[in-house]
Length: 348
Image (cartoon, rainbow, N blue to C red):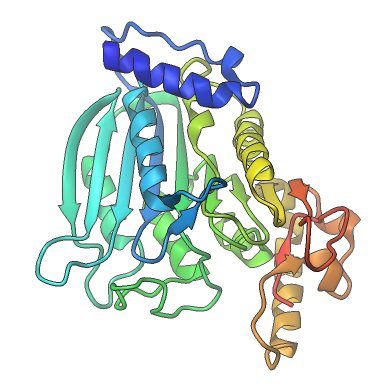
């Protein structure tokens, strides 16, 4: 009980800086946990690459390890949820397994499972989705909700084997990621309520189009995202408010991280929330325009994504921003940026 109180205080301290602590009224007595899970959180934390960064005081930090600590803390406070935390690290030089699954249910750790992320030819997330399907609880509440959280570098548009530092047999692309998401779901009618993509430049039309069949909404950054990441802490609001509207929860997630990043980062900060069903009527058209533009500019040097409204011919903001909310702060130095942002990222 004492350790549980300390965890609650830690979350309260973090959220109080963002004006959210008053909304968190956590029940401390967990002697009668729920019989059926009210929600599921699935984390995929990629650590098989360079995730070292330095904070505002110059201290070195490992981004994937920080998010892993956040995820474990929230899992221990989840009285009504089931939590799967997949952490993929570099492949050992000799033997060993580089993947680790931490499985929690009703705040209790059900098990820790070392695993091999995939053999040659396996699809991205295939091993993780198989483990999930084997371990997940069979009975859920009538209003059960599912969320997927991805932490890593930018998921590329085209498949290549360079995404992992040591698992070069696993190809990663937007299409393989979307297919991997589908394997976590029960059937074609099942969808995640929200996907959080804590990665650079994946707030783009092609990603939105690819995941829309599998999720009702998405949070992502249309441009660079600092490795201090989009923090998952507001997911704890699912405990005192199990039916908190998805829009409200998404706004808390974006707001917490936007404020934190804006205080500590001098470069551009962009986080977008996409209500994918509202945007579905124009995603094909916008994605096709972005792809044609990129193909015509393929001879130019590679560049970071920028606001689609600034570079995409025929971009009509009134037409292509339905269902999109943006948190945006331009860079304080370097190349001038616009005062506003459409919420969509495109390759120049």
